[in-house]
Length: 262
Image (tube, rainbow, N blue to C red):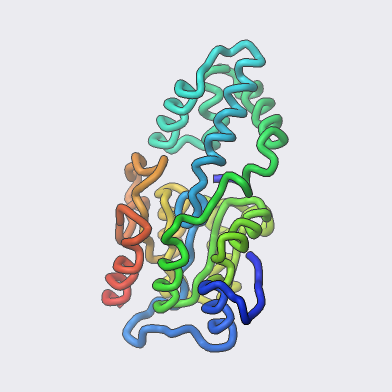
């Protein structure tokens, strides 16, 4: 929602040991599958970012009230969730404008939010308990990458929570200078991976930021319909994922289905 690392041997965590093994050998591809890369979104997909979302919401509410716009956390969260369903961008600024009625005021508030939530992009995000297991299973299909709108500090989160060893590619908006849903970040990931789009899968929780831009380039797509973006519905044909699942644990089976189609 917001703003990788490498470890050593001997006392490695399971995910790190697996990452070291992968770094020294070719990925275990399925011979019958044309899938060579699986790219994951991070916040809301592999990382529980609910505390970060709450921190951003609280900052907007505080700043609105400081300017005389009386709004509660619950009221702002309801509007935010409506903006999610309507696919309004940028999400929080659009939500603020519901109360300010002035995009310029909302933009001024947006600029003040970042300093107030500084550090929450690390402390407010944690790997879902099953994330390492799912990445391990997914890596049996293909190499693993990330395509995410995040600050570069998300590398601290991924390293801290033992996921860094799974990733062969890591494309973060702050580092590459382009954000989803711009297809350019997906094109960059493909180019650097040396992968054709029809051999790639994008896994994420948003149909507007994950499914649609990836599909426009020819990726296979898996949507996890959970969290704050579960109420998004396709409003264009290109927003329909190849496979939709209800939980992260269902992703390996979804990849199996896509592999069999190949």
